[in-house]
Image 1 (cartoon, helix red, strand yellow):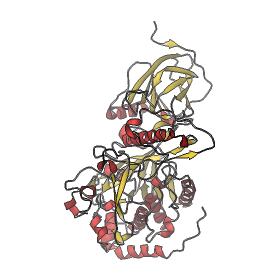
Image 2 (cartoon, rainbow, N blue to C red; image 1 turned 180 degrees about the vertical axis):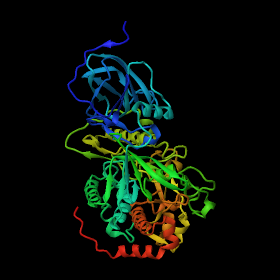
Image 3 (cartoon, helix red, strand yellow; image 1 turned 45 degrees about the vertical axis):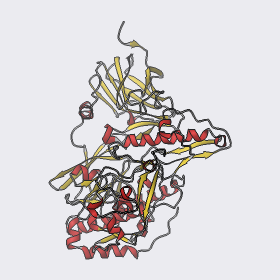
Image 4 (tube, one colour; image 1 turned 135 degrees about the vertical axis):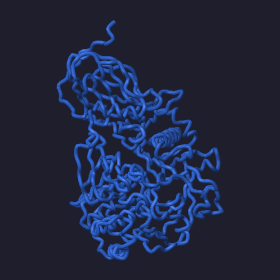
Length: 600
């Protein structure tokens, strides 16, 4: 019998430039589908699994098909593979099952069954037309995922290891080393959270040409309508700028985040000298010696690459990616209690350990449900129950947080996110067993992790809990805060019967405290600022100033410093050593600028 099953496949359509054709091979990146339907693009784990991917985030209801059109190199026989994973392997039906359609016909087996990211063989087909329709058909609504689809006339599976896969992808795309497009700016800011937005505005108002690179369609990071955490902290010297960006104090997860989203996006876009690159994810920062030469970024759906050149850069990625790629010193985890004298005897190891470890505050995934005027059925989720157990809730707040010392908040972020999804779906299923919740339906579940702590880049000063506790005044204090220092821990540490995805906070009341400018630039990379939770601090030192108005102050402070760097053609450190008085005066001026009425 011929190895190919013959099917007549016809199409009227066009060729998408996202399909990479090389000889008798075609690689279709799923995130580049012409019509993603109800699937969403998830780029947040690109550094771990190799690419953005499509996610069927239907909250238990199958999403609309993702569709695209491709042109084969020639008609004839093709083998098909899909790079995917079963995100909850176990003794149950995989929650992320899906199928592939070619020209309206289901092809091969049910997919999404492989444990761990890799290639699943679909089937072999023979085509009489070179042009075909391709569809992804979600079967469950429970977060099926597809990275890429591969057609080949030879039955040879693509590489599995990340390194070989990256080389193969580059080869089959015939992609040159350098991006084809280069843009030059006075300042490049990577990360469009509150800190990155504030840095961009402050620098732009001083006349700098700024590139702001952000890997999502909406600005704000944890404050965005996609994650929905309200902003905390005080405004310090930067009330006018931060009021363009922050949120009202609505409950975390509230739909009202959309109102502040529009305000924030409109305000940033109103600056002619801020070039905004939404849906672009940085993937490399190249340093020569101690100086970053450029940052490369890729569009999360089209794959278009751009090289950003500037004399200075701001890392507001949260995870410290720019510093990490450039070779900046960084820390991760908890220091020994003796390293900086950060003890709080009442709470002992929960606050600061005797020996250093890799424990950090965790990530949250917020969610909520809605009571309606009719009954709603929620499907059984046996794959979620080992996490949720008997826990039953209809919404999640900040306490829905997950961290474990053996899981890295960057390297294992997809597993952490997926653990939280299991907690959410299982807890909601349990709540639905109560007749009082018969009319409740899941209204919204984020699929983005809201992180609190990961890499912390090292500056000339490492801000500590002791600095906050003593209200230490610095000659270069540029950020002011009064918020308590709080450290989160998982409640399962107190009682193993507690859910492992619920946290609690320890609050230490402090006087007003200050963060020095020296904590906002890299110790060993000469042209790198950092603003946000990846600023230079200890684990306990991060506990107070990690909230978003405080990190926004950091951003505004480095934006102004970048303007003086340009004025005098110096690096960030030289602002402290040679131009501190002028810098502090510039910051002081911000307090007296009129705050315009902001329409919401």
